[in-house]
Length: 226
Image (tube, rainbow, N blue to C red):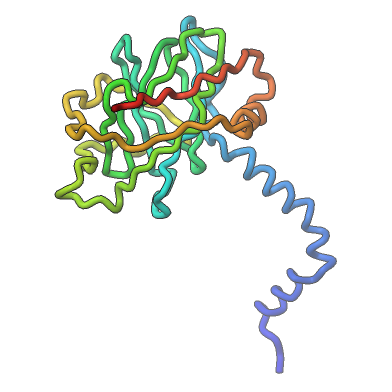
């Protein structure tokens, strides 16, 4: 019985000599995959305007296996000026953005069409020196938006606006006062933790090896409520 052409090609591909020849190409492919995991926004550079700084870190929603990181956004708000930036994560939860130097808070977290408003002052960070770059830490938020009941959960809000279509896996959009009138009514807050992970700064240097500015660890501060 004759083998099919497809089977012949499969046998050829699995041939040991052929696989050995392909190893350098496979290594190159996976190396490029790692290099592009921090950001696919080729236009992002470390050049900043006067009084402007750069924040980078990682944010993830944990304790929910159904979450797709690429669909998570969060709002970074300048506490003094009130200006806000909507930040999109890359597929692994990393982000990087340019903002005016100052004090910031994470005011809202989106997942697809759902979002949670965080209390004023709950998650804050300081980034006041434009001569530094700031690593905000790896922030993990315990929130299960896809599992909450739409009618009863105090955390569950359906977003009325869509901000999809951003170019690149890491992107920011300046927003003038994003729905600051809609606030979390419940006194409870969603649990959050912050961890310093050396691999996050290592990943940054891998993408920006010529960086001359000092990286300062300025972790997101979590306000403790009694």
